[in-house]
Length: 173
Length: 390
Image (cartoon, rainbow over all chains, first blue to last red; front, side, top):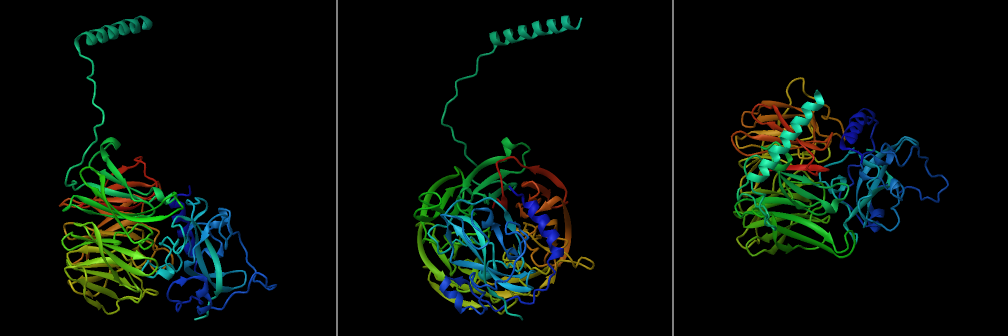
């Protein structure tokens, strides 16, 4: 079990490294992402699909808490639980309701809107606990909080792990 | 010579034992089935330790500790479960504890059941249940403001986030749901008078709803905006003194809000930090509390002010303030680190703190700030939120 102090020490060390410019913080993205059908309505530029030949490059390991997509995550990394950075482990159910963060991809210099979809229906994975609260807000801002069990709209409320899905390029302010 | 001495001593011991067997009766046969009970009003040094069981959330539980004692056998008074990131509140006037929890019929799958479980404080036994609307109740990191008692402890208000936000109202006498109050765009429940509740809104305002005697809505009013949830957020967890809620802010200030009984009136904010302390800010999970002397406590982090993402990290000190004088009256340096705190009642308050470096809880003197004891090994894993017995 990764102790909370490990997490705290990580946070304190990271504080020095997180000064990268976050010009693309998407303040206007109000409300909660409800259902995949809502996503095209959001004021974000959709990322290229996985089939696109010009998919932006990423660097780092998606099992590492410092991986760029995890800037606002709080939970067990699905990449350590049988899933990946953007997929759920077998036999779980991905929550259609999420919180979001805006993370800087050092590989291409862009800021992306990341949807943190919880994977649900099995006990807590227990591996690769990662807490990074950049841009996190208290639950009175549901769209930007990681303090909620986001297994909402799923058949089971049991939290298993968290995935980090790119849902768009953040607009510049 | 030594062997001879040992032999003599052994003979003497056998003789004493034989003598005792002749003169003392054996232990009596003991009855089985005896279950301990607790006092009707929990003493001032008793605390609830909410272990959310972060790694296996269906096993969440709340330990009841007597922090005045010095051994595990005397400290642990009992526990009750709060399954799947549940919440709870104690009502001493009713001799009851209310826990909102969630189950699935097959553990982590199957039909979902959201239920209010009512525990009696003397037997710490479940005495009743109230079935709640399925899939609505707030489920997240433990909060003190997800449940509130209203109407002289006759009603329990339960915060829902599904993610639409409402409040379920339960009549505790009839043990029935009597209504649901929509609070769109707003979250949590802050008691406002005996018949009112307030909620924090994403747009920086506070909503106040006053209820009629039957639980229907009497009035609804929004405050002026007094914070920016993007640029100058406040924490959702206030310290309460009388009718004033003191909300700590990410930027190291405190925002008082007067609960008038029919509205929430924001007052002038003031800084917790002094000159040269500008890097300090509140941080942690259960980051504040109040005592019966009218003082307010904040868990403070020396590096958190202005640093994005540091607001949940916890801190190295607790600062105690006289809120009327806006003056710090005590600094409590912690042994290692603090994640949550709670303050006991009475004229000599004790402060219980979660130490996340070893997941113990530590007790401090609220008047002197001195460290008193560490309590650990009682089965806790992730004691994320603490509450003093009311």
